[in-house]
Length: 80
Image (cartoon, rainbow, N blue to C red; front, side, top):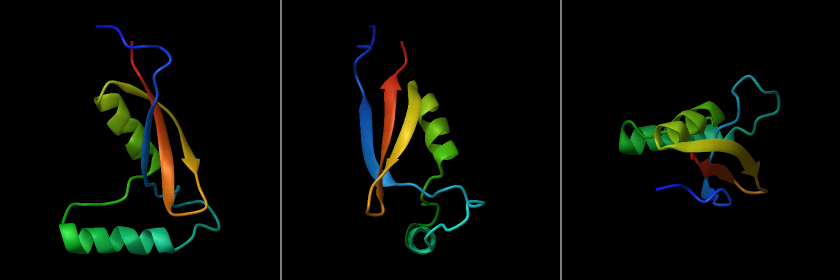
C-alpha cells in the first residue's frame, strides 16, 4: 500500500523546547515534572523525541507548529 503524498499527520500535543534555548517558559517543565510524578515514565517530548517517534511509526517528521498555548502541532507525513 502506498501513502498519499498529500497526506499529513497533525498531533496536538505539548512539546518541550530545546533545554539550551534562552527564554523558555518554565510552565512546560512544571507540567513535565507533574506527568512524571503522576504517571511514572510519562514525559513531554522534545522535538528530537518527536522526530524519533515519527520515524519509528513510518512517518517523516516535518516540523512543530507552536501556538499561543502550551499545545503545539506536530506535523508529519507518511513515508512512501
